[in-house]
Image (cartoon, rainbow, N blue to C red; front, side, top):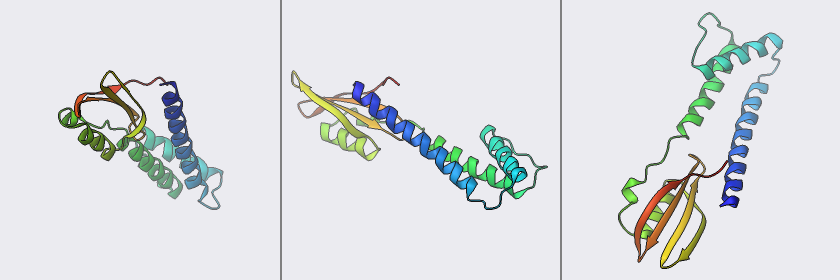
Length: 149
């Protein structure tokens, strides 16, 4: 499970770094942005992150910063909703595995012991780890499991 933790941490760090680079690239794409415009962009971005909008600031740099960070915030928050898998608790092992895969989970580890099969699956969009335990072709349990950060 320690390798899973490392993989998950690396994936999340990579996602966060990508988001930071994209925000910086969006901002630097505005050619000729002087210090005043840069400050207005930063103010717009900061306001978007806390959910406010300064109606008295009508500069295009403020609006660009606000729009850019608001969009990024919406994308981040929409990807953080937990995936529900309660409907997969009864039925076949293959139906449960396919159902989890269709919801964004990938197999990261697995094993068999005493007639039980275990799969550990991870969803990088939500950060969820799930253990799927099966026996005789049927689902025994599907549980979200904590992973160490």
